[in-house]
Image (cartoon, rainbow, N blue to C red):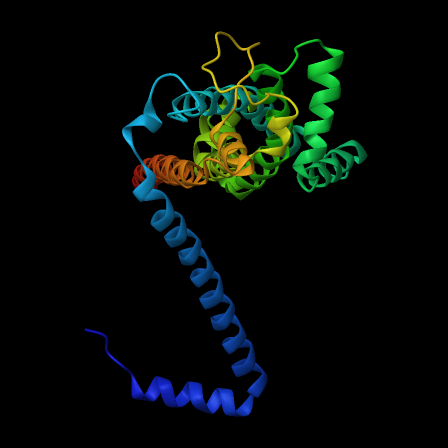
Length: 299
């Protein structure tokens, strides 16, 4: 049962009477929150209402045909592209962030240039990345429209996000952890990988979650690099469409709009599951770090 403190309400009313601007700002914040939540719930509800009735077993057939419009090949392609892009971008992004946060000297012009470049790349439209991937991987390197070309393009696209979030997570680790490790005789490298990175892992996972969301929902960049072939790829040099591209193609043709809504439901469920798993892992890591900190304080 919610208890209402009359004294607290009186004090807030007196404060707002003395400062009407605070009341206006509070109402604006509440209104913005309500509008954002309402729009989000409307979009999710609309997708579910329009898509769930159109989900059939034919949509999950192993092979795509013009009759069943199966999304299974697109689902498999999505997983392959996501894993490939993360395998390329996550190690590069984490190691680059470790260098910027732990090894680079403060005030270094090169470091400032890297950070400025990273922030600039994070704001470039995805279609520009698609054109870059088309010219570089598809044409210049001769990979053609392939899963590998799409994975490399997406890896470049999500690299700034992983670098920035990892760097901020590393900076959030208290310096006392590093000093304690050095006092026990640990080297710089051992301190980074045994002390700093495990404590920064929840923040690093947040960046990876954002990257996964961008990979799963990307369409423009993959149209120019991975192609739109609705088949399960034989290898990484085969062309294939992801779920987002599959949904775009179905809706643009105008013949399978209902199946496009069903694909949107499946895509929404996959994103929710991935976010839930990532948050679950982050919570487990936070609990592990909490146990380590309590044992450290006791000793």
